[in-house]
Image (tube, one colour):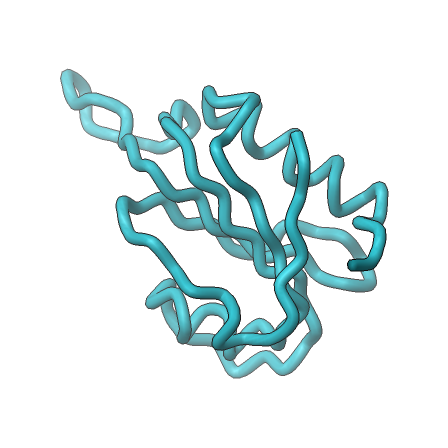
Length: 114
């Protein structure tokens, strides 16, 4: 098992905290192309073969940054998914759902500890 790069660990920690669960029950990432990651997670489609880290975390999340109509609750979910560009470390895509994903279909899965 390889060591998780500091910037990968930090991105996962920041995302989990911003989504209201600083200690998710599980967190993993895999190196993939952006196109493959988004198609795999049903998060849309972009013709982009850039390498990204695709993250999946399980916990109790609330998206307080979502734009929702007045009187509507913020979206919640048990799964946060996001991509981060391998070279620039920019967060490119985000999803919140209740689905479980088997990342082994995309490649070598690395666990992230909190």
